Structures are given as C-alpha cells and as structure tokens.
Image 1 (cartoon, helix red, strand yellow):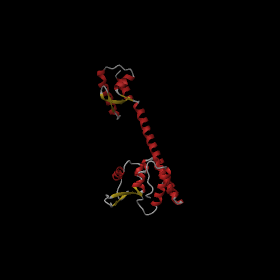
Image 2: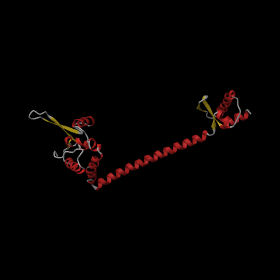
Image 3: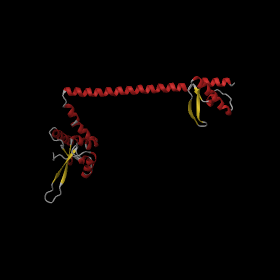
Image 4: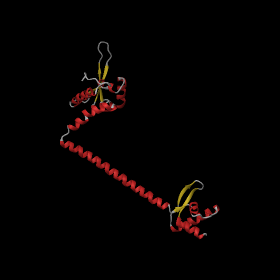
Length: 226
C-alpha cells in the first residue's frame, strides 16, 4: 500500500480506494495494517505532531506498533508506526467528518453486510433489547417524576392550611399588638402538642426561624382571645 498516500487534498474516491485496500488487508492476519506514514496528513500538519498525539492517547503494542529501520549510507535510523483499524478510526477518521463518512461506508456497512442471517437476527434482538431497556428506564423516570409532582401537590395543598402567626393575622385582618405575637405562638404550640400535631419551622426575613401552625389551631387561639 505504499503507493497510496492520503492528504487533506485527497478526493473521496482516493480515500475510499485506500480504505478498501485497508479493509482487504485487515481480513488477513495483519493486526496493524495501516502505516501512519500514509494517513497522518489527513489531520496533522506534521508527522512529529501525529506521533506525539498517537503516543499520548494510544497504547503501543495494543493500538499501534513501531518498526525501526536502520539508516544506510550515513542516514539516521527511522521509525515507522503501524496502526490497528480501530486506532486509525479514532485517531484519524473520526477527526474529519468527510473522511469518517467514507470510512463508515467501507467498514461499518461492509461488516453489517457480511453478517449471516442468524447474526443479523442477534444484532436486531440486541438492538430491540436496548430499546426496550431505554423504554423501561424512561417509564421508571416518568413514574418517579409523577410521584414527585404528586408529593409536591400534597405538600402545597397542606401548606395552604398552615400559617405563621403574622401570616394568619394579616390574611384575616386581625389587629394584634406585636408584643402579643409570642403569647399567641405559645398557646398555639401548647394546643398542637396536646393534639400531637406537627409544628414546622420556616425562615422569615424579619423574625428569623418562625413556627408554622395548622390554621384550625390558630382559628381556635384567636377565637379564644377575642
């Protein structure tokens, strides 16, 4: 494949011809069929940048291998890099959309076309299982959201029947000296404790943490004191 060198100026037909040749070569026992020398120009501006990125992001002996050539006639030795098909896909093809589209046409579709009917059915079953699992998870999420919404509704409805001392007298236009707020609160607290009713606390800008009582209790407190 040394006569097939790709670059950013390579046409779609040239890229496809190269990938077809790689695909045929990958069907042999050659685990590393792509010479980096033939493809780095598709993405990188220099071979040194390509080799640095390759070593930083992939594993030698798994994703690529190196072959050192001894220099002759006073020349320095050189190192060639050979990539697996999957390494080439993520290192080169996926970085350039048009290149990846051609790559998919050659590899992904060809692989699908080579599946036997049984293998195709298995693939379809896997796909259906994944879709079913996603549907189940989506239904579970919807159920959880409905539960949370219902809880919020119940809490909101309950809160409409509870008030602080200030909120209650304001809403009911009750005239009460501010010095008596504490006494009313203590009476409301006493009634709640006797009846086993919960008293909650909320933040108030003016008074800090204040108690919230059932409106029925507050109605009784203010009726008693009128």
